[in-house]
Length: 391
Image (cartoon, rainbow, N blue to C red; front, side, top):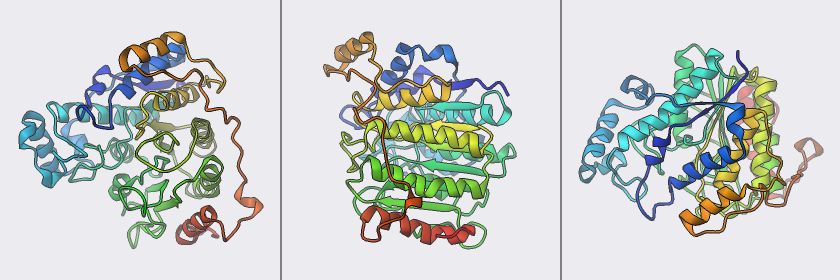
Protein backbone atom coordinates (compact mmCIF):
# COMPACT_ATOMS: atom_id res chain seq x y z
CA UNK A 1 0.00 0.00 0.00
CA UNK A 2 1.46 3.35 -1.04
CA UNK A 3 0.04 5.24 1.92
CA UNK A 4 -0.37 8.25 -0.33
CA UNK A 5 -3.79 9.90 -0.38
CA UNK A 6 -5.73 10.45 -3.55
CA UNK A 7 -8.00 13.34 -4.46
CA UNK A 8 -10.51 12.31 -7.09
CA UNK A 9 -11.07 15.28 -9.36
CA UNK A 10 -12.14 15.99 -12.92
CA UNK A 11 -13.06 19.63 -13.68
CA UNK A 12 -16.03 18.34 -15.66
CA UNK A 13 -17.84 17.37 -12.43
CA UNK A 14 -18.74 21.07 -12.12
CA UNK A 15 -21.13 20.43 -14.99
CA UNK A 16 -23.52 18.88 -12.44
CA UNK A 17 -25.70 21.96 -12.69
CA UNK A 18 -29.46 22.07 -12.12
CA UNK A 19 -29.61 25.66 -13.32
CA UNK A 20 -29.82 29.21 -11.96
CA UNK A 21 -31.36 29.55 -8.52
CA UNK A 22 -30.98 25.90 -7.59
CA UNK A 23 -29.35 25.42 -4.16
CA UNK A 24 -26.86 22.87 -5.53
CA UNK A 25 -24.64 25.50 -7.11
CA UNK A 26 -21.63 23.78 -8.73
CA UNK A 27 -19.43 26.75 -7.87
CA UNK A 28 -19.00 25.10 -4.47
CA UNK A 29 -16.98 22.33 -6.14
CA UNK A 30 -14.76 24.65 -8.13
CA UNK A 31 -14.14 26.94 -5.15
CA UNK A 32 -13.22 23.95 -3.00
CA UNK A 33 -10.78 22.66 -5.58
CA UNK A 34 -9.17 26.09 -5.84
CA UNK A 35 -8.89 26.44 -2.08
CA UNK A 36 -7.22 23.02 -1.87
CA UNK A 37 -4.74 24.27 -4.45
CA UNK A 38 -4.30 27.62 -2.69
CA UNK A 39 -3.14 25.81 0.44
CA UNK A 40 -0.70 23.72 -1.59
CA UNK A 41 -2.31 20.41 -0.67
CA UNK A 42 -1.70 19.03 -4.16
CA UNK A 43 1.92 18.44 -3.09
CA UNK A 44 0.70 15.90 -0.56
CA UNK A 45 -1.86 14.18 -2.78
CA UNK A 46 -2.14 12.24 -5.97
CA UNK A 47 -4.85 13.96 -8.01
CA UNK A 48 -6.71 11.36 -10.06
CA UNK A 49 -9.45 11.76 -12.65
CA UNK A 50 -11.28 8.43 -12.74
CA UNK A 51 -13.39 7.38 -15.69
CA UNK A 52 -17.15 7.73 -15.60
CA UNK A 53 -19.09 4.81 -14.18
CA UNK A 54 -20.23 2.55 -16.98
CA UNK A 55 -23.65 1.00 -17.26
CA UNK A 56 -22.63 -2.29 -15.67
CA UNK A 57 -21.29 -0.37 -12.67
CA UNK A 58 -24.39 1.82 -12.40
CA UNK A 59 -26.54 -1.30 -12.40
CA UNK A 60 -24.81 -2.51 -9.23
CA UNK A 61 -27.30 -0.19 -7.51
CA UNK A 62 -29.63 1.35 -10.09
CA UNK A 63 -32.31 -0.35 -12.18
CA UNK A 64 -31.72 -0.55 -15.91
CA UNK A 65 -34.97 1.27 -16.72
CA UNK A 66 -33.96 4.15 -14.47
CA UNK A 67 -30.54 4.49 -16.12
CA UNK A 68 -32.30 4.56 -19.49
CA UNK A 69 -34.66 7.26 -18.21
CA UNK A 70 -31.71 9.40 -17.07
CA UNK A 71 -30.02 8.96 -20.43
CA UNK A 72 -33.20 9.99 -22.24
CA UNK A 73 -33.59 13.10 -20.06
CA UNK A 74 -29.95 13.87 -20.65
CA UNK A 75 -30.56 14.02 -24.40
CA UNK A 76 -33.93 15.80 -24.20
CA UNK A 77 -34.53 17.46 -20.80
CA UNK A 78 -38.06 18.44 -21.82
CA UNK A 79 -38.95 14.76 -22.03
CA UNK A 80 -37.83 13.93 -18.50
CA UNK A 81 -40.14 11.48 -16.74
CA UNK A 82 -41.25 12.65 -13.26
CA UNK A 83 -42.12 9.05 -12.43
CA UNK A 84 -38.36 8.59 -12.11
CA UNK A 85 -37.90 11.74 -10.05
CA UNK A 86 -36.57 13.61 -13.09
CA UNK A 87 -37.71 17.02 -14.24
CA UNK A 88 -38.92 17.94 -10.75
CA UNK A 89 -38.17 21.05 -8.69
CA UNK A 90 -35.52 19.20 -6.73
CA UNK A 91 -34.03 17.41 -9.71
CA UNK A 92 -34.57 19.42 -12.91
CA UNK A 93 -33.38 17.67 -16.01
CA UNK A 94 -30.48 19.20 -17.91
CA UNK A 95 -28.49 18.34 -21.00
CA UNK A 96 -25.63 15.97 -20.21
CA UNK A 97 -27.18 14.92 -16.89
CA UNK A 98 -26.34 11.25 -17.37
CA UNK A 99 -22.75 11.87 -18.38
CA UNK A 100 -21.79 14.17 -15.51
CA UNK A 101 -23.70 12.11 -12.94
CA UNK A 102 -21.87 8.99 -14.10
CA UNK A 103 -18.58 10.94 -13.93
CA UNK A 104 -19.18 11.88 -10.29
CA UNK A 105 -20.11 8.28 -9.54
CA UNK A 106 -16.96 7.18 -11.29
CA UNK A 107 -14.82 9.27 -8.96
CA UNK A 108 -16.31 7.57 -5.90
CA UNK A 109 -16.03 4.11 -7.45
CA UNK A 110 -12.45 4.91 -8.41
CA UNK A 111 -11.74 6.02 -4.85
CA UNK A 112 -13.09 2.73 -3.52
CA UNK A 113 -11.02 0.73 -6.00
CA UNK A 114 -7.83 2.61 -5.12
CA UNK A 115 -8.28 2.09 -1.40
CA UNK A 116 -9.24 -1.57 -1.70
CA UNK A 117 -6.34 -2.40 -4.02
CA UNK A 118 -3.84 -0.48 -1.91
CA UNK A 119 -3.02 2.21 -4.45
CA UNK A 120 -3.99 4.72 -1.76
CA UNK A 121 -4.71 4.53 1.95
CA UNK A 122 -7.24 7.37 1.84
CA UNK A 123 -9.22 8.75 -1.11
CA UNK A 124 -11.48 11.80 -1.20
CA UNK A 125 -14.22 12.71 -3.68
CA UNK A 126 -15.86 15.87 -2.42
CA UNK A 127 -18.03 16.06 -5.56
CA UNK A 128 -19.71 12.85 -4.38
CA UNK A 129 -21.88 11.90 -1.45
CA UNK A 130 -25.11 12.09 -3.45
CA UNK A 131 -26.83 9.85 -0.96
CA UNK A 132 -30.54 10.32 -1.73
CA UNK A 133 -30.69 8.69 -5.18
CA UNK A 134 -32.71 5.49 -5.10
CA UNK A 135 -32.31 2.40 -7.28
CA UNK A 136 -35.15 3.58 -9.50
CA UNK A 137 -35.45 7.34 -8.96
CA UNK A 138 -33.61 10.61 -8.53
CA UNK A 139 -34.24 12.34 -5.22
CA UNK A 140 -33.02 15.30 -3.21
CA UNK A 141 -30.62 16.77 -5.82
CA UNK A 142 -29.11 13.30 -6.41
CA UNK A 143 -29.24 11.42 -9.72
CA UNK A 144 -26.85 8.50 -9.23
CA UNK A 145 -25.95 7.32 -5.73
CA UNK A 146 -22.17 7.40 -5.91
CA UNK A 147 -21.79 6.46 -2.24
CA UNK A 148 -23.84 3.29 -2.67
CA UNK A 149 -22.03 2.51 -5.93
CA UNK A 150 -18.65 2.82 -4.23
CA UNK A 151 -19.75 0.40 -1.51
CA UNK A 152 -21.25 -1.99 -4.06
CA UNK A 153 -17.95 -1.97 -5.94
CA UNK A 154 -16.08 -2.78 -2.73
CA UNK A 155 -18.37 -5.77 -2.22
CA UNK A 156 -17.83 -6.83 -5.83
CA UNK A 157 -14.07 -6.72 -5.25
CA UNK A 158 -14.42 -9.00 -2.25
CA UNK A 159 -14.99 -6.79 0.78
CA UNK A 160 -17.02 -8.57 3.43
CA UNK A 161 -17.54 -5.76 5.96
CA UNK A 162 -18.00 -2.09 5.04
CA UNK A 163 -19.21 0.65 7.38
CA UNK A 164 -20.81 3.79 5.98
CA UNK A 165 -21.01 6.82 8.29
CA UNK A 166 -23.14 9.73 7.06
CA UNK A 167 -23.01 13.07 8.91
CA UNK A 168 -24.98 15.12 6.37
CA UNK A 169 -27.88 17.04 7.93
CA UNK A 170 -30.26 14.89 5.83
CA UNK A 171 -30.78 11.17 6.35
CA UNK A 172 -28.68 8.96 4.08
CA UNK A 173 -31.80 7.22 2.85
CA UNK A 174 -30.59 6.05 -0.55
CA UNK A 175 -27.53 4.28 0.82
CA UNK A 176 -29.58 2.71 3.60
CA UNK A 177 -32.11 1.47 1.03
CA UNK A 178 -29.41 -0.01 -1.20
CA UNK A 179 -28.07 -2.22 1.61
CA UNK A 180 -31.20 -2.69 3.72
CA UNK A 181 -30.97 -6.47 3.39
CA UNK A 182 -27.18 -6.85 3.18
CA UNK A 183 -25.35 -7.93 6.36
CA UNK A 184 -22.00 -6.99 4.80
CA UNK A 185 -22.77 -3.26 5.09
CA UNK A 186 -23.51 -1.29 8.24
CA UNK A 187 -24.99 2.15 7.53
CA UNK A 188 -24.89 4.79 10.27
CA UNK A 189 -26.57 8.15 9.73
CA UNK A 190 -26.67 11.19 12.03
CA UNK A 191 -29.15 13.75 10.76
CA UNK A 192 -31.79 16.27 11.71
CA UNK A 193 -34.98 14.64 12.95
CA UNK A 194 -37.32 13.49 10.16
CA UNK A 195 -40.19 15.45 11.72
CA UNK A 196 -38.50 18.68 10.65
CA UNK A 197 -36.48 17.85 7.53
CA UNK A 198 -36.44 16.02 4.19
CA UNK A 199 -36.58 13.13 3.48
CA UNK A 200 -38.71 12.42 6.57
CA UNK A 201 -36.91 9.11 7.13
CA UNK A 202 -34.12 7.99 9.42
CA UNK A 203 -36.08 7.12 12.54
CA UNK A 204 -34.17 5.12 15.16
CA UNK A 205 -36.54 2.21 14.58
CA UNK A 206 -35.18 1.82 11.03
CA UNK A 207 -32.66 -0.93 11.70
CA UNK A 208 -32.54 -3.06 8.53
CA UNK A 209 -34.61 -5.80 7.00
CA UNK A 210 -35.87 -8.69 9.07
CA UNK A 211 -33.54 -11.64 8.89
CA UNK A 212 -29.99 -11.19 7.61
CA UNK A 213 -30.36 -7.42 7.37
CA UNK A 214 -31.50 -6.92 10.94
CA UNK A 215 -29.24 -4.48 12.77
CA UNK A 216 -27.45 -3.25 9.64
CA UNK A 217 -28.94 0.27 9.72
CA UNK A 218 -28.42 2.74 12.58
CA UNK A 219 -30.07 6.15 12.69
CA UNK A 220 -29.57 9.04 15.10
CA UNK A 221 -32.37 11.61 14.64
CA UNK A 222 -31.09 14.86 16.16
CA UNK A 223 -33.38 17.61 17.46
CA UNK A 224 -33.50 20.77 15.37
CA UNK A 225 -31.12 23.33 16.85
CA UNK A 226 -28.47 20.80 17.90
CA UNK A 227 -25.11 22.52 18.13
CA UNK A 228 -21.48 21.49 18.29
CA UNK A 229 -21.38 19.84 21.71
CA UNK A 230 -24.57 17.83 21.16
CA UNK A 231 -23.59 16.78 17.62
CA UNK A 232 -20.19 15.52 18.72
CA UNK A 233 -21.64 13.89 21.83
CA UNK A 234 -24.15 11.94 19.72
CA UNK A 235 -21.55 10.85 17.19
CA UNK A 236 -19.11 9.58 19.80
CA UNK A 237 -21.91 7.98 21.82
CA UNK A 238 -22.87 5.73 18.92
CA UNK A 239 -20.22 5.23 16.26
CA UNK A 240 -17.08 3.86 17.97
CA UNK A 241 -18.80 0.95 19.69
CA UNK A 242 -20.44 -0.07 16.42
CA UNK A 243 -17.13 0.11 14.56
CA UNK A 244 -15.44 -2.00 17.20
CA UNK A 245 -18.18 -4.63 16.95
CA UNK A 246 -18.48 -4.69 13.14
CA UNK A 247 -14.72 -4.57 12.38
CA UNK A 248 -14.98 -2.98 8.93
CA UNK A 249 -12.39 -3.60 6.26
CA UNK A 250 -13.13 -0.18 4.77
CA UNK A 251 -14.70 2.95 6.25
CA UNK A 252 -16.76 5.09 3.85
CA UNK A 253 -17.84 8.46 5.20
CA UNK A 254 -20.11 11.19 3.84
CA UNK A 255 -19.38 14.76 4.95
CA UNK A 256 -22.29 16.93 3.92
CA UNK A 257 -21.55 20.46 5.13
CA UNK A 258 -25.22 21.39 5.54
CA UNK A 259 -25.18 20.81 9.30
CA UNK A 260 -23.68 24.30 9.54
CA UNK A 261 -25.56 27.10 11.28
CA UNK A 262 -25.39 29.21 8.10
CA UNK A 263 -26.91 26.57 5.85
CA UNK A 264 -30.18 27.81 4.35
CA UNK A 265 -31.91 24.44 4.00
CA UNK A 266 -31.76 22.92 7.50
CA UNK A 267 -31.94 23.66 11.19
CA UNK A 268 -28.85 22.40 12.99
CA UNK A 269 -26.38 24.83 14.53
CA UNK A 270 -23.02 23.20 13.91
CA UNK A 271 -19.82 25.15 13.25
CA UNK A 272 -17.04 24.57 10.76
CA UNK A 273 -14.83 23.67 13.70
CA UNK A 274 -17.13 20.84 14.76
CA UNK A 275 -17.24 19.59 11.17
CA UNK A 276 -13.45 19.52 11.20
CA UNK A 277 -13.51 17.63 14.52
CA UNK A 278 -15.75 14.97 12.97
CA UNK A 279 -13.44 14.66 9.97
CA UNK A 280 -10.49 14.14 12.32
CA UNK A 281 -12.47 11.51 14.23
CA UNK A 282 -13.37 9.62 11.04
CA UNK A 283 -9.72 9.62 10.00
CA UNK A 284 -8.71 8.22 13.39
CA UNK A 285 -11.47 5.61 13.26
CA UNK A 286 -10.32 4.46 9.82
CA UNK A 287 -6.89 3.73 11.29
CA UNK A 288 -8.21 2.22 14.51
CA UNK A 289 -10.87 -0.02 13.02
CA UNK A 290 -10.26 -0.41 9.24
CA UNK A 291 -6.48 -0.63 8.80
CA UNK A 292 -6.53 2.96 7.58
CA UNK A 293 -8.74 2.29 4.55
CA UNK A 294 -10.87 5.41 4.20
CA UNK A 295 -13.08 6.68 1.39
CA UNK A 296 -14.35 10.20 2.19
CA UNK A 297 -17.10 11.88 0.20
CA UNK A 298 -18.75 15.29 0.11
CA UNK A 299 -22.53 15.68 0.12
CA UNK A 300 -24.93 18.51 0.82
CA UNK A 301 -23.93 22.05 1.70
CA UNK A 302 -25.59 25.18 0.40
CA UNK A 303 -23.61 27.98 2.03
CA UNK A 304 -21.44 27.68 -1.05
CA UNK A 305 -18.88 30.39 -0.28
CA UNK A 306 -18.61 30.68 3.51
CA UNK A 307 -18.82 27.02 4.50
CA UNK A 308 -18.47 24.32 1.86
CA UNK A 309 -15.01 25.15 0.47
CA UNK A 310 -13.49 25.53 3.92
CA UNK A 311 -15.08 22.37 5.30
CA UNK A 312 -14.03 20.13 2.44
CA UNK A 313 -10.56 21.66 2.20
CA UNK A 314 -10.10 20.66 5.84
CA UNK A 315 -11.24 17.15 4.86
CA UNK A 316 -8.71 16.96 2.04
CA UNK A 317 -5.92 18.21 4.31
CA UNK A 318 -6.74 15.60 6.95
CA UNK A 319 -6.74 12.82 4.37
CA UNK A 320 -3.46 14.09 2.92
CA UNK A 321 -1.76 14.02 6.30
CA UNK A 322 -1.36 17.78 6.37
CA UNK A 323 -4.09 19.18 8.56
CA UNK A 324 -4.80 22.87 8.09
CA UNK A 325 -4.73 24.65 11.42
CA UNK A 326 -8.09 26.25 12.17
CA UNK A 327 -6.51 29.65 12.75
CA UNK A 328 -4.88 29.59 9.29
CA UNK A 329 -5.42 32.70 7.19
CA UNK A 330 -7.07 31.97 3.86
CA UNK A 331 -4.86 32.94 0.90
CA UNK A 332 -5.77 36.37 -0.43
CA UNK A 333 -5.77 35.21 -4.04
CA UNK A 334 -8.61 32.81 -3.33
CA UNK A 335 -10.59 35.48 -1.52
CA UNK A 336 -10.19 37.88 -4.44
CA UNK A 337 -11.37 35.22 -6.87
CA UNK A 338 -14.45 34.53 -4.72
CA UNK A 339 -15.39 38.20 -4.78
CA UNK A 340 -14.80 38.49 -8.52
CA UNK A 341 -17.04 35.49 -9.24
CA UNK A 342 -19.76 35.90 -6.63
CA UNK A 343 -19.55 39.50 -5.37
CA UNK A 344 -19.50 37.99 -1.88
CA UNK A 345 -16.83 38.65 0.75
CA UNK A 346 -15.00 35.42 1.47
CA UNK A 347 -14.13 34.29 4.98
CA UNK A 348 -10.67 35.20 6.25
CA UNK A 349 -9.72 32.18 8.32
CA UNK A 350 -10.29 28.43 8.36
CA UNK A 351 -12.32 28.57 11.56
CA UNK A 352 -15.58 29.87 12.96
CA UNK A 353 -13.69 30.73 16.15
CA UNK A 354 -14.91 27.71 18.12
CA UNK A 355 -11.78 25.55 18.03
CA UNK A 356 -11.10 23.46 20.00
CA UNK A 357 -14.64 22.11 20.23
CA UNK A 358 -15.54 20.40 23.50
CA UNK A 359 -18.30 17.96 24.37
CA UNK A 360 -19.18 15.61 27.21
CA UNK A 361 -18.65 11.94 26.49
CA UNK A 362 -21.48 9.46 26.93
CA UNK A 363 -19.50 7.44 29.44
CA UNK A 364 -19.88 10.34 31.91
CA UNK A 365 -23.62 9.62 32.11
CA UNK A 366 -26.74 10.96 30.48
CA UNK A 367 -29.77 13.07 31.26
CA UNK A 368 -33.04 11.27 30.37
CA UNK A 369 -34.82 14.65 30.25
CA UNK A 370 -32.42 16.11 27.67
CA UNK A 371 -33.71 15.99 24.06
CA UNK A 372 -30.29 15.20 22.63
CA UNK A 373 -29.72 12.39 25.09
CA UNK A 374 -33.21 11.07 24.39
CA UNK A 375 -32.27 10.85 20.69
CA UNK A 376 -29.07 8.95 21.45
CA UNK A 377 -30.88 6.60 23.83
CA UNK A 378 -33.57 5.87 21.25
CA UNK A 379 -30.90 4.84 18.76
CA UNK A 380 -28.93 2.72 21.19
CA UNK A 381 -32.08 0.94 22.42
CA UNK A 382 -33.31 0.24 18.89
CA UNK A 383 -30.04 -0.84 17.25
CA UNK A 384 -27.51 -1.96 19.84
CA UNK A 385 -29.21 -5.19 21.01
CA UNK A 386 -29.46 -6.31 17.38
CA UNK A 387 -25.68 -6.16 17.25
CA UNK A 388 -25.20 -7.85 20.62
CA UNK A 389 -24.34 -4.59 22.37
CA UNK A 390 -25.76 -3.20 25.59
CA UNK A 391 -27.86 -0.08 24.99
